Image 1: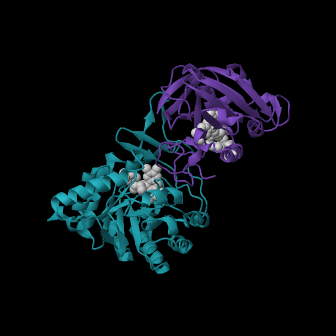
Image 2: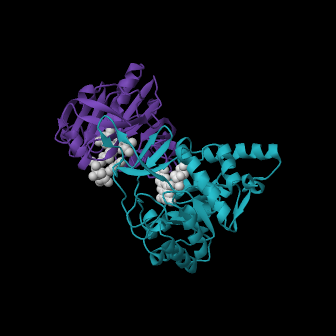
Image 3: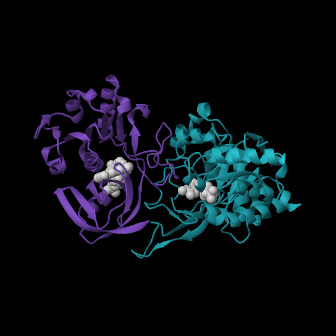
Length: 296
Length: 233
Ligand SMILES: Cc1cc2nc3c(=O)[nH]c(=O)nc-3n(C[C@H](O)[C@H](O)[C@H](O)COP(=O)(O)OP(=O)(O)OC[C@H]3O[C@@H](n4cnc5c(N)ncnc54)[C@H](O)[C@@H]3O)c2cc1C
Ligand SMILES: Cc1cc2nc3c(=O)[nH]c(=O)nc-3n(C[C@H](O)[C@H](O)[C@H](O)COP(=O)(O)O)c2cc1C
């Protein structure tokens, strides 16, 4: 009842681990893969990158704000780390990549033979010359997707930012470039100030908001993309309960990603899976049947 | 995050100091805080008592912390992490270098619980041994023989009847902990022992995944204190 097929990936349930959450080591990805439909590793670029100084993540009443700054050991070293997922992982592995140019994006895929699909980070809100900086330009998005598709046979997803005037325009550009699915959304730009020290709490001053606060924003993006695109939409942003998962599916998401909610528990996906199982038993419909139902 | 004031700074030697806060942080021994010295970095530090940290200068932030003036305001996240499991029987504490920090808190806590506590404490030189006045029963080891046993703290532990302790707690540099792990394994005492581990930490709240061990545990949430038998060393 929970199984879904997403661009030829067979998933035991529609829940994927979102990029950047517990995705820097094979050991945590393997542990989460037990109950996940798929896992997305931390975004990786060609070269090693330090990221910003601590504090890079803060929590507040309605979610998290992060400016990790795409810290990464670089493609070669990360691929080595991910190798053990091939034998021990229990679900498809999606490798998230970031770069500045179409050619650089395309050059990354060959490092990861263990990947079942690729996600293009066109949406990190706090990195220079990467993420949103490249993903806000429809022309460039089309070129990036087309170039990456030429470099690999595997499914390619484009992860979009909500910090644009029209997310559908970017989604369409990715579709025209030949992308297999869109992922919506990455974090929403935001910040927080400590009133005692009178300083911004993040070392980078501002970052991206995730968690419960952004759910309505993400849901609306999924709704709009589902209406206008032919390809599957993967919903992400603020999913914390099984009801949130159902809401995103009804809005048009074929699958969802979950990140910040792992703040509450490493076993989050397990408990959501059990609740979703009970829900489908009660309704008698599989989750796959519910995709986009709220549009009818 | 919230702020506390540094009320008092006790300098132990040229690169180690204890910073005492103006308020008690509700906590258990073994727990750590993410401490933000504004203008520097936010770093993980174990509590050395419910209202202090004991820091060794190894880099930019720790250097600045050791030299901080009383009255300074610092940001705190936590205390968080998995603490040591207490006992009220016989306990052995094994410290290497600045690894003494969380064990100082544990030492006081166990004594208040009525435990019989003995400490083995090693450092490179006599000068690096700090807070000895806080310890009730201890033996020290130095790499250069300038005080106590001439050799490492693990070599000192090897000479001891480890079996007679109900619980063994250790914290120190990883090579020391690995050597001690081998010793405990040989003597089949691993499940009696708890180790406090260090990893590079970023978020300190279980989401970013920087401090994940090969066993799949997060040092910031499932740790920093682990049962030694759980470590595949
Ligand atoms: C749970 C936990 C508890 C800790 N408790 C204490 C404590 O009570 N007292 C204390 O003095 N130190 C403690 N540390 C270590 C302390 O966090 C590091 O020394 C500190 O982050 C270094 O920051 P820096 O900017 O001064 O040095 P940097 O310039 O960042 O680094 C200096 C050197 O220290 C190494 N280093 C940096 N961060 C860490 C880290 N997290 N773990 C291990 N090595 C690191 C670097 O690789 C480098 O060699 C603890 C670490 C953890 C994870
Ligand atoms: C600490 C942290 C790090 C993140 N790193 C990445 C990243 O490297 N690449 C990426 O595409 N998204 C990254 N994200 C965004 C998440 O994948 C996700 O899109 C966002 O957090 C919204 O989902 P959530 O509310 O379930 O967390 C990160 C989020 C957080 C909180």
